[in-house]
Amino acid sequence: MAEHDKWDDIFTRIAVPEQFDETKSRINSFIDSHKALGKDVVLVTSGGTTVPLESRTVRFIDNFSVGTRGSSSAEYFLQHGYAVLFLHRSRSLKPFSRHFSRLSVLDLIEISCTHADLETLTVKDCYRAKIKKQLSLYESVRQSGSLLCVEFTSLADYLYLLRASCQALHSIGPKAVLYLAAAVSDFYIPKNEMPEHKIQSSDGALQLSLQLVPKMLKPLVKDWVPSAFVVSFKLETDEQILVKKSKDSLTKYQHQLVIANVLDTRKQKVLFVSRLSEEFVSISSEEMAAGIEIESKIIPAVKQRHHEFLNQRQS
Image 1 (cartoon, rainbow, N blue to C red):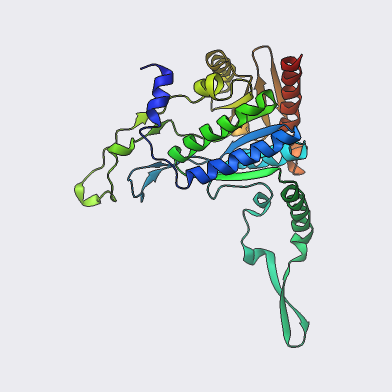
Image 2: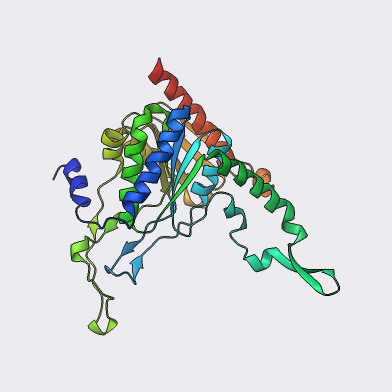
């Protein structure tokens, strides 16, 4: 079966997300409003996808991604003037609130006495400045309408919402950036092959047969958003194969940039691989200890390459 036909086929074999038409309408409205303003728009995908084992899902296959790179990158894209469509895993990290992800509400507040018989809840002094800063940034973004967060859980949700987002972005051509940081499953179970109810352990050992998900970059680059600036990610554990795998991806899918990284050092350095060049983006150990995030350097570098791409397309 041809690759294009495989993609047409997979959408007939996975379930349509709940409230899909409503979500698609929100995405279209967001893109149209920023198109009217002439803004650059980036689709940031973030977090991992689940693969359900039953139609009425109790068990599923998952991965370890919590959306650290995607959520932090979304913040820096906003700082650099982009409107951000943030397609993220439900309950994964989100822009601004990510700074408090390891804390519960009970960690942040305390009971204080303003009068002898009156108690109030207040934010602890050690968190007050940080919360105020993030609230201020979030309020500015909220008022500008420059961030739309759309949730997915399963692989099926992600694929439907990714295609809908790309179809909406098609209308703004090279002003669109796709920053594909989500950890997407390579396998799935077709909906007609899943049991409806919870798999019973009394039935004995479980044997699974998973189908390969066709690589999404080919239809995305060729058909869904052919004029956009597309950034994919390549994560490996062996640095020796990183460049070759990245170059192979660029040759096969014909997109613009691969951000390659090694698992153990991904928070300190990445390699930008394009068809013409390779360039490291990194932070020092001192910068890392000071709380500087590598995404604060990744996003300006992506913006520079996007605008070079944009100028070439418009000249």
